[in-house]
Image (cartoon, rainbow, N blue to C red):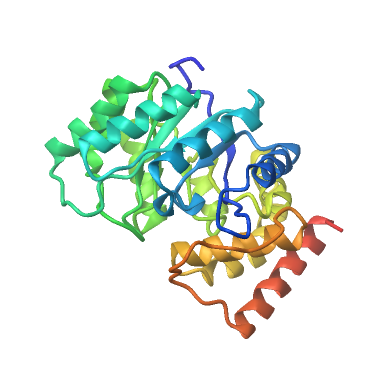
Length: 303
């Protein structure tokens, strides 16, 4: 991929990681998930926190990235999450992503250390040195870790306009997107709220979204409706989608429900998540998730 990648836009699906019964990564099922996503017309693939990278060994992370690039087979860009707690780890993960053939990287700041702006500048400049493709700055402080100062994001974008992209998730998400968009003169911004406020975020200037791979038959027509200016269709889909996503209160909730839906569609043979797990899906929540899942299927005409 060229370092000049300002054409990155649309729906970039974040992969769930399937496991065998002994919790090894199931690469055959991973390929089926990737084919499922590409068959639905997505514009890119992402390996990120919902991909359980925080539960994988370094060797497994490398293997997951390599398997994803191989299965994608050049059909869409692959973006790999490389956020780390030290510069040494960051360089190691970034270089592994480059070696595997990814198109670019996405990184949250360190979560355990409250870095100042100078340290964060060094952090992201290191990525720009190691990686030739796009570097997504992910401020996930709305639910995890530390924030990235807005001025630093603006400055790095102005210095590297063909390289830097954004995934802001700091609350309030709408106002944060607007400030970043306006302050950078229209920088490429992806949202990551699972479709919760996609209609509003689109109107604020985002160029893409990074949802899970489980309900792309809903996300893709929602995105396409927004691109066509068909707000009525977009809002009809987003209604039950927003209700569903609003019930997911942490990363493990997203992981569990996405695997539940992938299993329901016959893509995943199980719903295994590596323990310990910080979310329990009780019977009433399960019934409500499945009800909303089926409502969305009816709206989108999915059998």
